[in-house]
Picture (tube, rainbow, N blue to C red):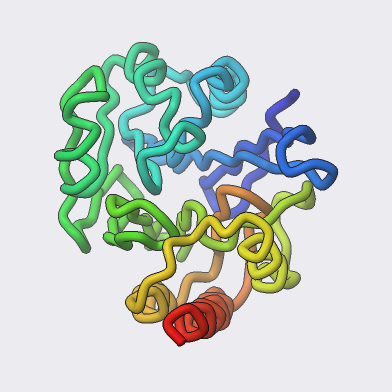
Length: 242
């Protein structure tokens, strides 16, 4: 395996590892995002066993010990499995997440106490502002949340828009259709009546880039893509309730 690096927005890097054995024969990408600033932030840590690959990729951009913030969508191995390895290599780093994640898991599992972020709180990393938004059960996990990097208009959207396969680092093509297909295949989302409203709240941010954890990042009308995804989840929820 190798971890590829691509700058998907100014000062925002996608670190991508393709694993052909997952969701074979298409395979699956596991992506982390490094946001540069006076206090650099890594969104997703990758699996614990993937740490050497991701660390070496980060080292090609900045010294890993400079990392200041560690964040992720929800508490799951591919999102935060290497959390403590990063805390060990970066002595000033702190994990930052919402109240639910911190109280339920991170206060115990993180080797250093995490920073609790309120819904809508902005984390200023020096030259960039990342707004944290609670998205409980979207797409899964009651502690789920996303971050919006205001300078570049990039939504770090975790497992939203998950798709199988390998592809370009950045696309202007369809990311909704492949996400619908992945939902049909994996059934990974926690269907609930609030899904559409929560996703439309993200659409209101009008992101210009969508940073997907599994799949290519998207450049274009992020609001339209989120709206279409919300509509599909509304359809699924309605069918399930019927």
